[in-house]
Length: 95
Image (cartoon, rainbow, N blue to C red; front, top):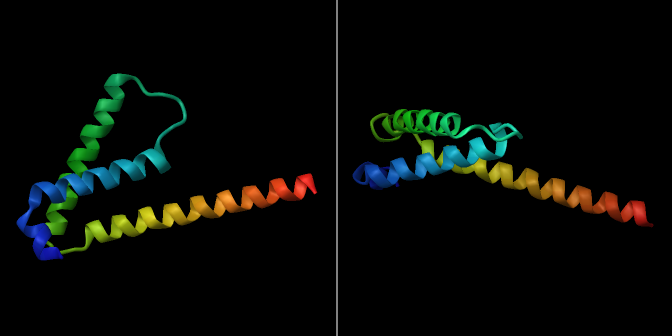
């Protein structure tokens, strides 16, 4: 799999950027809206960080995309767990 990412650096960069942006939006983004300039600055910094992660993925042969995928999977598990807990608390309140 790493060989495929090595042969397709633009797709690899895009995947890394999307994963990092998703993690930022779900975990680190503040509740209040940022101005357009600040939002653009944040995504430029995310793009620069994605280039660095691309170098680690391609040149260092580190599993960056797989690690980001695991992080997103864990975020999904936590979200499902919170959903189930909230649902059970609502049932207990009605009963």
